[in-house]
Length: 98
Image (cartoon, rainbow, N blue to C red; front, side, top):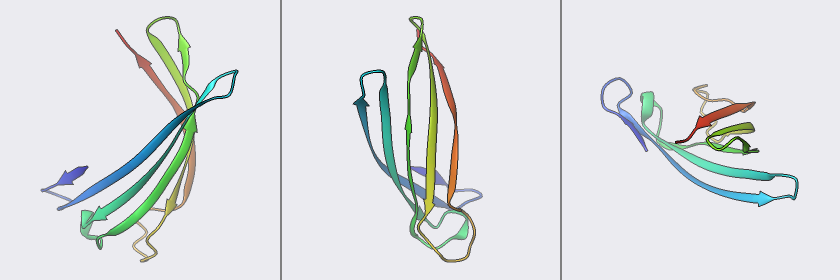
């Protein structure tokens, strides 16, 4: 949950699920998130986006992980506000754990 009392004056709520699938060579980490906009940035309160994607965590040594990912965001509200659009994107996460 994200809430902005100053500039946005609303809340953004997200509900998600995830599942790791071992495919032998690697593990795919899959997720889906349903997002609800409750008046954030003056928009009407409604379900706004459905996000889903997958990543492959790759350990580098004992303390480092690099995780390439690909995700897709689907716009659910068609109110013409153009705050969010359907979009395919990717990248990677890099983490160091101690």
